[in-house]
Amino acid sequence: MNKKKRLAILGSTGSIGTQALEVVAAHPGLFEVEILSAHSNAALLIEQARKFKPNAVVVTDESQYQKVKEALAPTQAKVFAGMAALTDVVQWETVDTVLGAIVGFAGLHSILAAIEAGKTIALANKETLVVAGELVMRRAAEKGVRIIPVDSEHSAIFQCLTGEDAAKVEKIMLTASGGPFLGRKTNYLVNVKASHALQHPNWTMGAKITIDSATLMNKGLEMIEAKWLFGLRNEQIEVVIHPQSILHSFVQFVDGSIKAQMGLPDMKLPIQYALAYPVRLPNDFKRFSFRDFTKLSFDQPDYKTFRNLALAQEAMEKGGNLPCVMNAANEVVVHAFLGNKVGFLEMSEMIEKTMEKVPFVAAPTLADCEHSDHEARAYAAELVKNGQLSVY
Ligand code: NDP
Ligand code: MG
Image (tube, rainbow, N blue to C red; front, side, top):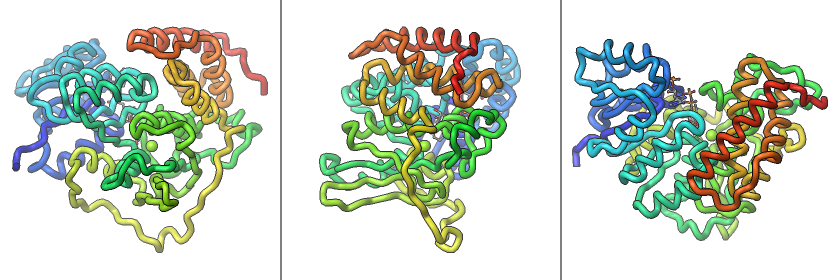
């Protein structure tokens, strides 16, 4: 019973990855790092490998391989390069749990490989379920693999469902802080720059999800993530604006009773919960006090101003490859917005145009998802290049 959980931490240099390593460091008797992966941040990956002594390190940006290999030569770590190596090492027998904390579509294949090998999945990479949720959940069920959410809202729902009959869920309510532009209208948003959008009021996260939070695309992705994770119908999923980010989501049951999970906004809590599941571990994270939050408020989202949320709802309802197409377009326009190449409002326009353009596939295979992803990226990149969409 005192065997340590051996972890593969994919995306270890990111916001979730580094916080996961803090959780691991706080519980040396419980966790052991077997694999670390990063894309191009060689310096941090090397530092992490020296500290956590994994058996293998994968750097997916192959141009960084030599640097990492040389630096880790005196250690026991085997160093690999590229995505194919990553999908291979996650299947090693010495891995128990895989934390998927890569950002974007790039996280999909390693998670699928881990599912094939029967690994327990702690899933932060919501895009995996957005682009191929049906396939991923079906394969996980066939393999008897448990997917434990890391996303705070989904961790909340997962925790609320513990001990409950999933068939007795009437609906879920996903809370959204509303991001830095809550209450703003298009006349303001037309001028905002990436530097504004990167200032999230409650959470410190990677750049992509921070922009997604500002546009509400993050909540749209999370609706689709919840649909697949918890096997919900579209009409069972609701979004509620809750600017304080204390209630992390609600589940309403068939008798009208509502359970919610609460806590200060700190991703280390859902990360720890997912890694340690089913054990609830003690920690010294800062505690919530009612004295600091005498008012908790709730409101409706503004679907007209934050059109990404409406687009995601549409993608969820139409299904097929549409969420995959939307996700790809979103990744492209967010990257362009971060580089000040498109405006805040143009992002939704370009996503919508891409969703209209790429042919619909009702029941996509994995190959269809990959194809749709490529097509959508190419089309969205073209829109960014031409940059002539703004109607505001
Ligand atoms: P970051 O951008 O901070 O980190 C992303 C990680 O993925 C880094 O380790 C990065 O490596 C790696 N990576 C990036 N691109 C690739 C690629 N093409 N192939 C392989 N690895 C890659 O992101 P976050 O930690 O913020 O988010 C990770 C995931 O977790 C996202 O899906 C996000 O939606 C989700 N999530 C995040 C939350 C948060 O609080 N941050 C909350 C809930 C969900 P490198 O550093 O070398 O570039
Ligand atoms: Mg979330």
